[in-house]
Length: 327
Image (cartoon, rainbow, N blue to C red):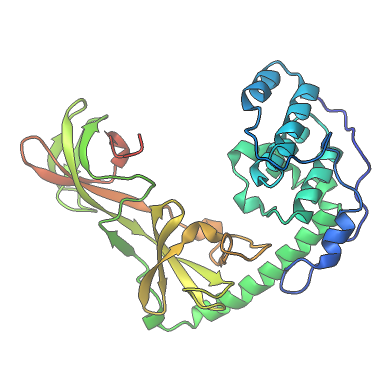
């Protein structure tokens, strides 16, 4: 990786934010005074990006070529946030941090969400860059820190509200989502056994009732997810009232899941919950209340029928194949 920092001067415009964390028109106007040079205008037609060429150039260490191809990819799809992230991530990898800062600032001006909670592993360099002194000292970095403070203050208030919430408005601390199949294209049915696995009489039991042997086939009958409901602040009106506390339960796939609110369970876009919501929308409608250290991973128990007819439970679902209907 190259370490020489090159690129245009940093944007000096002051970006403003109101107390609700929404962007002001002045923010976009100021950011537009200096834009990152994409090497040409955005295409009015969406084209597929040159991904194979980009990967080839990366493997060869040809970072100037990578950047030019990433610029082309953005020009061919200026409205696609993912391509802008690819460009910013490549600039950081190439050691061109000041150019990366120009890109993320323009992304912000275009209305893209720079919430680190939504930046995945494929853009890890970009996510790490947003924690550097260079980014934090920029107008955009300073504004995001202010938004974090607003969220943290709101979180502190709602933790007090949560402590006073009547039991009738809270789900059980140990919630069981019966019949759940907790990922996209998840299916019960004919499964293969990848690893020898003991089956017990019921979820949580230590009494072994059968053994699924590697290389055999079994039937996945049903399952249930054991979890600790995750309290979140609802930041926008919809199925869940704005200003209320809801509890995220099980995940059903494609971002959807179940949420407990005011004594009932409803469906919701649970992928829209994050630690921070800098731009409140359908894509980010709720902020978590519990610290990460207090969250527990859900446990998926599956009920399996062996070839000899014996049925039992296990929490080692990864021991079985053919659970994904999408392949």
